[in-house]
Amino acid sequence: MLQVDFANRVKEILKTDNSVIGLAVAGSWLTDELDEFSDLDLIVVTKEKISADKNKMLGYASQFGQLLTGFTGEHVGEPRVLICLYDNPLLHVDIKFLTREEFKHRIEQPVILLDTNNQLQQIIEQTEFQFPYPDDQWIEDRFWIWIHYALLKIGRGELLEAFDFLGFLRMVVLGPLLHIKNNNLPRGVRKIETQISNKDLEDLKATIPGYTRASLLDSLENAVSVYRQLRTELFKAHTILQFKTEKKVMGYFEKIKQLKE
Image (cartoon, rainbow, N blue to C red; front, side):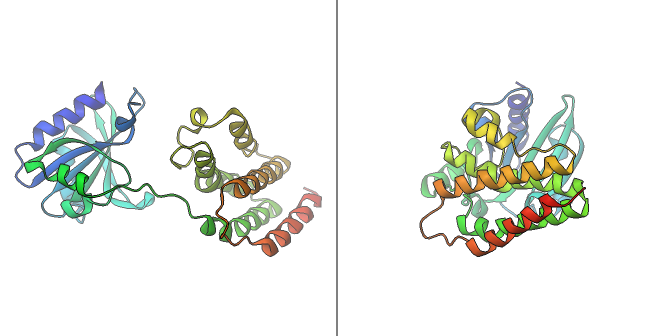
């Protein structure tokens, strides 16, 4: 498989680099789900910090194959990742550059491909990984303001913004919560088509609108319904629900529905 061949090539290249502590792989590799559409998630652990210098990151990446281009991952909150596209074969590779200390803090348990003096294995044995779960209170404190914002956009006729908002809501709130309900890691909407129940998937699909005011309102109302149900099923008892805000926003929802296009 292309991803495996690429990772093995990187391993051979880094074996002779005295500044490298080790190489690990994460992502789909860990769950045996690699296919022709998978990207490759590599972790390069170095003695000195590399991620503070994009040119150094690109310098490493350019050794691994025919690098077309690469950029750092600030847009996903991870500037230590260099997001790369290689040619011959055309392959998407994410390379995270970490120090030994940074490797201790992990969201998943990577597979080690190269390990100088068994350092990475020792870290894995001595520390635990923790995948980030959504915070119930964080979501509830924001949800109804977000719904009101979407209503403002629909009311003004800014339909594309409202359309994009529903995608945001699926990625940040509905997808993760539905994954949790179905005993999965809350990875946004990743592979959600195959990892949640048919009923839950149909409910989620009902939040995908067409490009009309009426469809956007229907989809937004469906999103509220799905959220309310998930909140009831999943939220911890100590979560403070914003009932006053919810009531005001849903009252405004009714006003927007009654407006003519």
